[in-house]
Image (cartoon, rainbow, N blue to C red; front, side):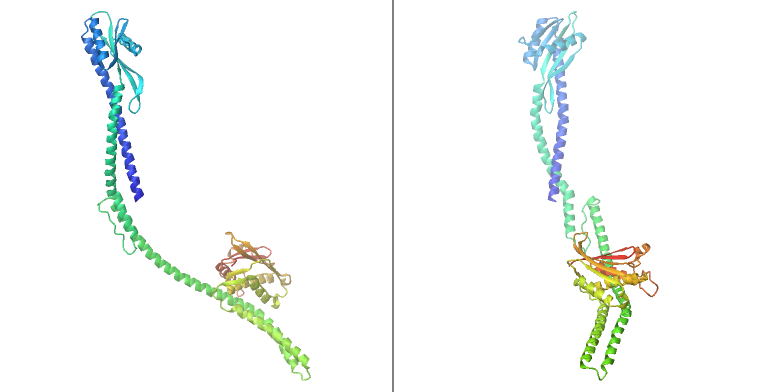
Length: 494
């Protein structure tokens, strides 16, 4: 409030000074005008008195004009009888030429004449310096007689300037008084209520309504305080509603998270089922080999060297079965919630080795182009494993749909880059030469339950779940499709 008080005081001071000065300016202008008018009237009265005593006595007239020039405020006086022009005092009159011209006009028109000339400093602006007055003398003779005088207006202007000093002091005193009075009056009407309102607002805790009400009935501050009280009540009601809404949203979000986890789990089980069907054949072959070696080892004439070789080969086949089962179990176990640094190259290598051992995938060529120098990503490893597994299974299905799986090829590449904000990222691209995605389906491929496969061959959740997993890891997924399909996954580096 200190800045407001200073601004109000300065504003009151400026307005008062400007108002007083404008009033003084107008009054002084009328004052100067009235002074000149009075000087003219006084001069005319003097000339009338002189002309009233004139009885063709030139000497008496000259004495009166001499007295007018020497003993009064006139600078000089003059008489014009026919064409004879004489000035008083006899020492000379500097304004004789101008006085002669006006007296000549007066003689011709036989009317009083007044005019001003010269420039001098008045009060606020320059003013006329000299006042010329001429009057004809009426007489019975045919001789025309005109008298005139010249007055200096400088003494009048000087007197006004002296009085202006007193007026300026009066303006200063009035300004101070009016400013102090106006400030305290404004403070009582505006500043104090505002201080109270600010204090009430600063101490408002949200538990009670704002208790400030102005003491002045019907005043704008009372209306403002009542409006603020109503606003606070509405805000409090909205805060309660918002709190309830936040609680309901949290509950809904929890349900959504639970449903999402169930959806991810369901899709994972579907992927496990697809892998299990393929791995069943892969497990059957090693088991047949092991059974064959066991049969051979029953022979009594079998040498110890052959027996050891059969045992060694049986162990290799059993280790192969154990590896396949372990990979399937690792993939199917529940996803841990904790995130940790994951080396994407190792993760992709495990997935590709799991897919390559399957008999139906042996005709397809898997190419790895890992060019990224840094492949460490902070995320949920098993969730990310499921996402990439879904991408690869879709690529394998697209290659088989061409009818020529022996020509199939899946290229997995990686490189480091920067995102739109300049952060370091890891870009992984999975490119296949399968059937591709129809243009009309591109906008829906990440929608839940959207699938182009025959009923029973797909849930429509694979890409949707994968998209959610990548997004939760802070990454993005982009799909491009033509003769084949390219899936580009961008993940932030640890």
